[in-house]
Image (tube, rainbow over all chains, first blue to last red; front, side, top):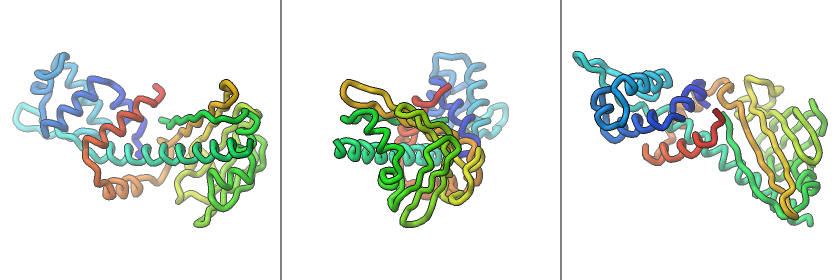
Length: 106
Length: 147
């Protein structure tokens, strides 16, 4: 599991940050200004959300002139999602066997 | 970060407890080639798979309501004594529901696991699913994460 999993999950738990991430994924890239134009929050708020996503390594930033352009870094997400989905699936299978064994024994 | 799953079983709590904690059963629902359980706090769990042996250490036993243990969830750590750096915590709770039992499992402590960069890289390279699907998956799990 990702060493920064806690940070990653905290970053994703906020609905606005989730929206920011989705917009970046849909558009390919964005700046605080373009993102604020599509969200019901201020540019300052978007900057803060981007900083949290950056710390969780979910976005990559590149300065171009006066602007900072952001793109999504999918690696932490895909790896974590896959890992968690696999573990949850394993538990579903184990619980199903426990259920069968317990009900058979009756 | 944790994973939480549950199921409702048409059998009494005592019967579910037996299946959950009895070595002959654990060797079927958890591992596939038998298991030995020293059912007391601090007791050892030996999980035998056809492809290796895993170890667990019991944390809490409160029949027939609660059972928890730590185990080295990552195969690289199998054979080691489970501790905070190489294992996760698995907690079961059993609750009476009508004539049956609601069984819940929570596995937690993934963020503390060591030696995972390689796993993460492999998982990413193996990934053939789309970005949207992954977001959907992770959102589902984020919804279950305790604050």
